[in-house]
Image 1 (cartoon, rainbow, N blue to C red):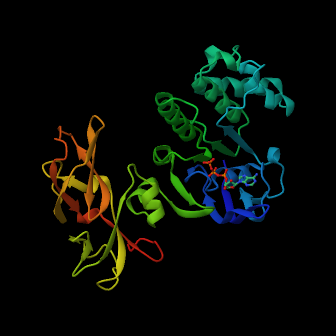
Image 2 (cartoon, rainbow, N blue to C red; image 1 turned 180 degrees about the vertical axis):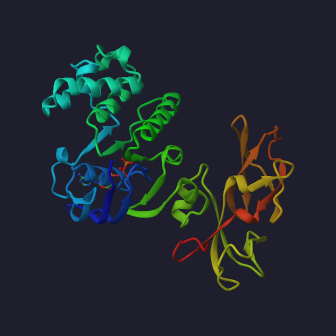
Length: 361
Ligand code: ATP
């Protein structure tokens, strides 16, 4: 397998700068997920690595070798697309072997690689079928198999699960992860689904408007988002954001509350400085539900709407003129417009600088 390195990569379409200087170090054998909202540049970066898009500026290296101008087929990469891109008139077996055959790989070697891929992906029973005779999940497995038989240095996946229904998406996600571990493969995977990103990635690259907003392990980007954008993008429902200011002692003043925060956690500016207070829905704890946070601030609010999700509910309420959402574990039924007492977990809140938008950690 291989490393992939991007240095100050820029992509310009006509007058439009789509990628605005991206640096990335992808280590050998790691699963890297590019995630971000629609139009942030995920596919463009993947397609530049694949050689399907030219690079306007910067250096792209695969295994230390500059490949900016190397044709796609010589880069040692295999790409799996959302649309599967299978040959409709060929059997599964021929779909798996075709690329190797036209590259002049000997017959017995093709048979070996095809056999291995079919076994790993459970495709043996379908080898004589056409793609139209397969389910979406089976088609995607053939597409993955076709990438595998090329024994690439790097696998590239462009939203490969988005055409599958929820259950199949979960299953295929687990299969892809297991396969990557088994092969020790270097993978770059594009998705706009943050659950996919969290569950698959060794490293997540959060992109915003053609730039890297944060690179880190799933836990790092979730627990220690570097800025307001990442904090708002990762996690569902989104983190609550409140207008606030630095209060007396180690507190953040928001919506008339002084929320105590751990003394050693933040480097807070002077009292009175305007900041943004970020609180995840699970860190606004309804009284009597879950463990009562030791460090915190209490408030009462009328729950305007409760969304029942089975094992939990989302409670919508207003705090200081802002609509907030709290997560209630093991829910019980609520009366319409019921008053609920909540406690904000001060040990888990986030504080952001208003100007730079960066976390004050
Ligand atoms: P999505 O999740 O919607 O697929 P994305 O993050 O993959 O989005 P890209 O497809 O990489 O986004 O596009 C990044 C930006 O570049 C978008 O603003 C898009 O409109 C623009 N763009 C992409 N391809 C071209 C092109 N061929 N010509 C001009 N602009 C383009």
